Length: 257
Length: 348
Image (tube, rainbow over the protein chains, first blue to last red):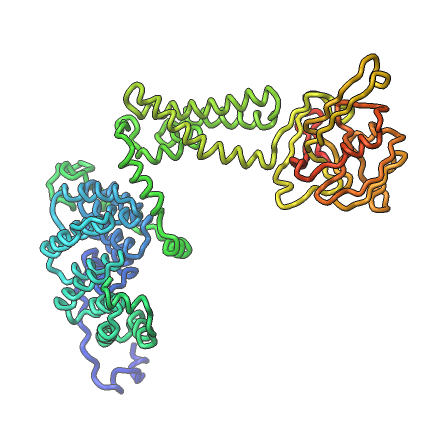
């Protein structure tokens, strides 16, 4: 409008504006799936869940969205809801391997190990292969106190060489209080993706649990360097800096349990 | 029409993919894509107390260690889920989908149990309680016979389940109820208060950590006594009375209180007592008592003693002896006359 031409808000007074890129990206289901994946790689499971839901609003046939929702519900510790949602998704996509694995993971965390085993077996019988099925299998092995978890997790990394896979394996180990095994996997994730703050954060957590204070400090510091507003990393840093001695920690460092 | 899941090409007009079964109408279907979320308190609770870890491990242990008798085709529900539901009659049947029979078992059990408890202490009550237990056993038998294979195996399995239910449910329940509502049936009438067939409920738990107080109507063990009467007093022949057994009567005084009874008036510690025995008319008018109730004793005049011995010397000494009851001989506080229903009354 002509009457607003004389107003000096922004553009002329402050110098030339950077060119605005045209919005070529169509915000369809695939776009939201990508956003969800990105949020997942930063450890923001709640946001990832929302983006998966947005993707499904656009296209309900995106099975990756359903699988992602179940995975995020498990990551957020909402296990009954994850079980319920995976059952609903399986009504729409009967016998989908990743959905069966998702339900198995939820049941495994609810300590229904037998049912989790049978669902995991079912997921392997379906078409296709994914790192997630092997990851869930490895988790069930840990929960069932079996020794073959390492084999399953190695298989998962063979199937998918993405850096997120060893990181999610580390998170699984941390959930079952195996920080030393988790640290091993977290190292692989940080080697594969040294520019990802979430990998450094998880590595720091593993070192924190093991009582490796100086290593944990540097991991959290690196995480904050990459993501200055990482609240959890800052909290852990503060806690480490004020940490006193503890008999449990000393014993853990000596005997390595 | 290509399936979005497995990329199989289906014929147009089909609802589900012929290969993987995925619905081909997903794009147009009205489906909620937002998952349910746990409440904040639910998440805090599960973080603090975990999931049903112990119960699930127990279920797995039962499944691993019990003999493989379960007929999965007939009862497609995990064994442990049926076993623990046997505590309630009809619940296993409802769980496996046999709602009609399950509800029938439950209804009959509840009716029989309610009638049995209302008429507890009477023959009718005993019959209905027996019917309730039989209904419960029938419910267990029904599910075991459907689920377990083998002839004698079924009976052994049923007996094991019945014993387990008895030990886990009925014993604790029976013990708990017996602490607060134990029936006592009056066989020998003692007018006016006690009539033949009356059922009174008394509570043992009333004196856990407490002692009987003046005014409480109690069930107690009367002090044992043997009274010999010469022929000129008893009638044609000498007589020996053995006083023993349980009585119901009111506590008039407790330990260390001074009691004086003259001319039918009761004075406790120098003050007129508001309490009288339940059959006060049976106290002889010429009875004179002056006692100090010892510690850990209470004074209960035996007015509900079926044997009435008038004029038996030493008269006052007999009443004095029978009235001092050790506290340990008091079984509980009587609080309700439950039968007959026409005389249903609180006892105060």
